[in-house]
Image 1 (cartoon, helix red, strand yellow):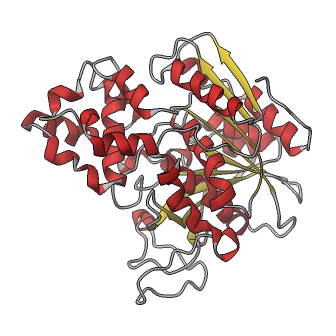
Image 2 (tube, helix red, strand yellow):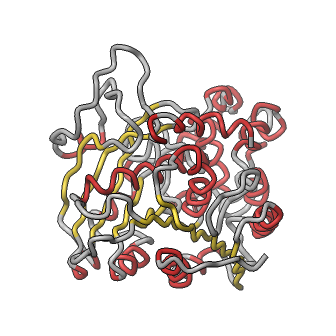
Length: 398
């Protein structure tokens, strides 16, 4: 994937840590500072300091709630430096959760959340702060294993700017960089070179696999052992075509917004009809439930003067955001519902074939059911990662 490698290769300098430098008038990074109060926490300094991807701008503890309180976990929100889809320095918010008695060499699990929505209030860190999120069960199980868990909000979700929803490089960077930030946020002193695993479902599954593809160039400093990802939107074009005009059409519209936010050359607003502008205005602030249920039957061709999917600039960006053209160097566990009505099964099966052709150690685990049936199927994924943390070999089932 030639064009995608351009931002990724920025990470080859400075020991694999992407410099977030730029204009000469940007201040130097001297370490974390005290966070602003309230919602100011999510507003990064302007200009951003010229640090490195994964550097912590500030963090704050929040009271553990729900299952996290029961587990005795420590919960910390963080704002850290990362890189957008085109390599632009950005700040991303997220959450680090530390088990009650972490081992000195406790591994770090980068947990990429599934679709939260596009509005700032939808950010995963805000739900996790009160113990409410679809990811709570999986995170609690990981904490019970003694793992430290790092959960990014992704670019523009909580923080200023639009969320680059399902844009692979931006999501992969955000996930890798919160893992880099975690030791400092968690106050860890032992085992400087920690084992890392990545997991996620749906949007999060895509983010985790993108991180796996990007890691050798972008984050070679991380000891990445494996990725377990479910419901992966590997081919956004195929996923979008399957959603268009269907009950969950809002997810396809959200993807168009995310791509447009990442790539200014797409100029989505210039393509919208008056009714399209109204619909997309609602999409831009909707959280996950509204995206899945609130735009049923909408067709993007009915909301635009020209169908974006017919335009070369859109087709090129979709191609850049298609997984499978670069071989991850670590084992993968991929699971997908065979009757998935939100993230088409066929394109996920093709991703498995692409990786097998490139000799990636893929364990492919399709299961009967629809997309929602995969949300709670985390035990096998976490067992796969536990084996990788233990150093057990796997050759996949290609």
